[in-house]
Image 1 (cartoon, helix red, strand yellow):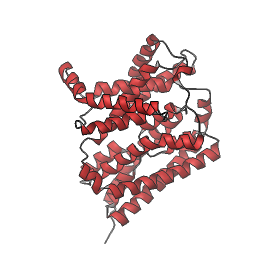
Image 2 (cartoon, rainbow, N blue to C red):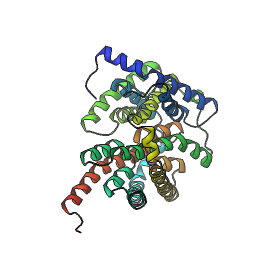
Image 3 (cartoon, rainbow, N blue to C red):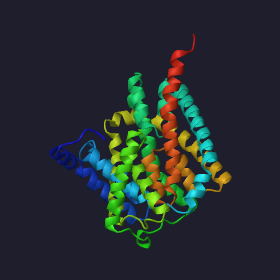
Image 4 (tube, one colour):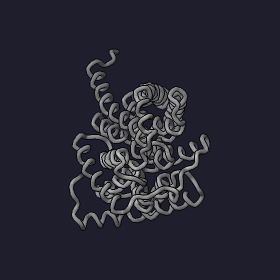
Length: 354
């Protein structure tokens, strides 16, 4: 919901983004050809990042971004099953485990970044906060923090998780992804109705300032209709692929402004923060899976320190319940968005005395 672009400016932006879109398609097709999990998300993101060698990644125009999120959301909503309600009933305990996971992840990562790499506690907290890239950068800029360091650590963690988590889950569970050819498809007309309804819901969620409103609005609209038996089937495969590729490019464009020198300078800090976040999240995901009887792949995706869009779409691509995963990432995003500013306000009022 940025300011509206003129038609000329929109088409110019799309033209500048064309190398990234083509490379994302090629990357997704390659991952599909060699039978890797979640090909259009993971392969598309890596392909789009490789396009930076052709031309620096431009900003993705808001209409194109929202279209990708809408289509991906429609595909998510259509994957609702009777098991979804059972997962939601287990939600409170799962959310409690997630809260403990978040606190421990931030504490350990901040301690490491401060004691080993000499970061300030403020920058350590912002870099360690999982799935809170946009708010962390805004707070770092407002408080005079190391914006580039926070950006590199957060972005590297997201990209590595998106690239490698699907394969790891495949090795752990050996759970085959349902082929698109075996899934009943909605008609194109029904899909466009879903997109229109999802757009209306997305605009309402945007007014509530929720993260990824178009993705979640379309998912909730589709889930409601599918849950009520008013709609059946998945979005047509070509349409779903377009949505996944656009979201993959959107994720890749988050590297804009990050230089190779910055990546090298912060490589050690990024690797340490990644390993701490992955280890803690994996441990709590195993605990949640064991206590609640939820598939390990679903809890790994729900607890992974990544963004709501990426993790939710990966869950759908891997045939796990996306609403369970999305609920956890939304809860984490909203809780961090409230708690981190309050924490800094508290520490500003009661600073450590020498």
